Amino acid sequence: MRYEKDFEMEKIMQLDFALVDLGLYLNTHPEDDYALNLYNKIAKKADMCRMNYEKNFGPLCSFRSYCNTNSWNWINNPWPWSEKSNFNLNPA
Image 1: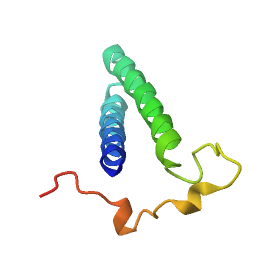
Image 2 (image 1 turned 90 degrees about the horizontal axis):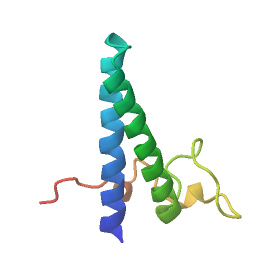
Image 3 (image 1 turned 135 degrees about the vertical axis):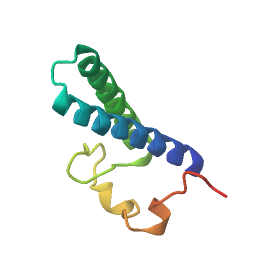
C-alpha cells in the first residue's frame, strides 16, 4: 500500500511541475493555443489524480481538500516535515 501511495504522489508532483512550467511559458506566450489547451488538459488530470489520492489515502492539505468523512482526519496523516511523509523517488 505504501508503494502505491508514493506512486500516486509522484504522479501528482509530476503533473504539478508540468503546470508550473507551462504557467511560466504562458506568462510570456499568453496566446499560444496549444500551450493553453495542454495546460487545461494537465490541470484536469492533476485534479483527478488529487481526488483519487485523497479518496484512497486522505487529504493532501487542510485548506484545499474536501472533508469526506464524519471527522476532521487531516490531523491523522503524517505532517509534511515528518520522515514518513517524505519518500525517496529513487530508492537505493
